[in-house]
Amino acid sequence: MRVSIQVRPRRPLLLGLIALVAVAGLLAADSVRPILAQAVRAQTTTTPTTGEVVVKAPHAVLMDAASGAIMFQRGADDLIYPASMSKLMLLAVTFKALKAGQIKLDDEFFMSEYAWRRGGAPSGTSAMMVPVGKKAKLEELLKGIVVQSGNDAAISVGENIAGNESLFAKRMTDEARQIGLKKSTFKNATGLHDPGHQMTARELAVVARHIIVTYPDFYELFALKEFNYLKHKFINRNPLLTLVPGVDGLKTGFTKEAGYGMVASAKQDNRRLIAVVSGNTTADDRRDDARRLLEWGFRSFSEAKLYDAGEVVGHARVWGGQRMYVPLAGNGDINVWLPRNMGTQKLRAHIVYQWPLKPPLKKGDQVAVLRVTTSADAMNEVPLYVAEDVEAAGTLRRGFDSLLCLATRWLP
Image 1 (tube, rainbow, N blue to C red):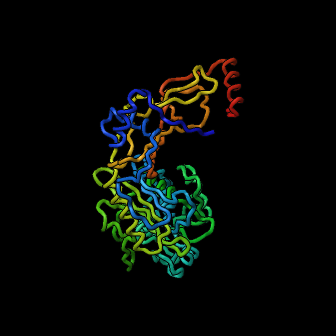
Image 2: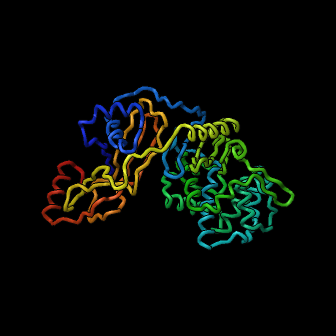
Image 3: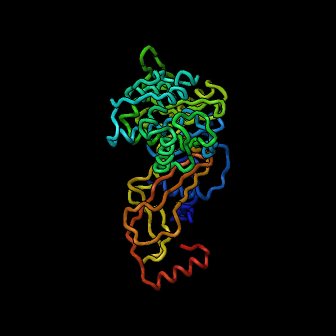
């Protein structure tokens, strides 16, 4: 059972002063922890003063790439048709195989008749225009996927890596589970409409972050503004590459069932954000929504330290251990992204973990997360680690803990 524990203040005599400081926002690092604790109890519901971003898309996410913190979310966990944005998962699988040495960029991949008819010139969809029966280097196909969103290139990559498109789609789903995508399922390599081919806006942001963090050398492909192949000159379909400073990826998408969508990332002042929008009715709305999210995120949020390195954040219940509770701390300082002007927003913090923990527990084991949210739905999740070893207790203690669990109907 997953439980959530509110972080409580440890110095109640300071509550009056803390309340005043909470209204003004997070100030000095050494005062952050009690501010957070008091904000958990606060009951203010005044409209945020940071300035709300206007987004038309029914599904949208703004994520900090380094921490995974969420600055904005709307319909983030609804299953949607991702269209060509799902090619990010195709690329993640391909980059993994390249990194492992299973394939090479100069490998030549055959363009089958199926790939040509389904995703090439006869399909009437976005295509790299590789001639049927010919070969193209994997590096060329990857550029055709990133810049032109070539469906023929995507199917060819899937066929040549996995044997056929269906097997490759299964590999995409398997890889999605491995990197933490719990809802996404893939039925093809292209994102062309299939009722079972679905993702969420949040999981699109997660796979984009995975590519950025895990495959930085291959991520550079997304910044290509154009790509020449045979007699064709393709211009990158990401309009933000020339509109927003620091934008260097990732992928657009459109089908009539999905509407217009985009996953975009930008880096400014050594900070990277990822924006996802989906379900827009026009390409212009898609462009403007993603642009507004990125510009708002860079302008309106800053990093704040909540806990010092080694400082105990809270405790988690242990079943059958030599102690009933284990202290939890971060791996170094605990920093989160919060609105620059908190105004009177309420700040909540919860420790979330699978209850109860079972020994042995070793110092440094990750067993929980600290979830920090604002009343405007900005959310940070920071891993928490065991701060002290806990060994297993004897039979008598385990029996006593079992009785407690039975009494509360929480069985380990």
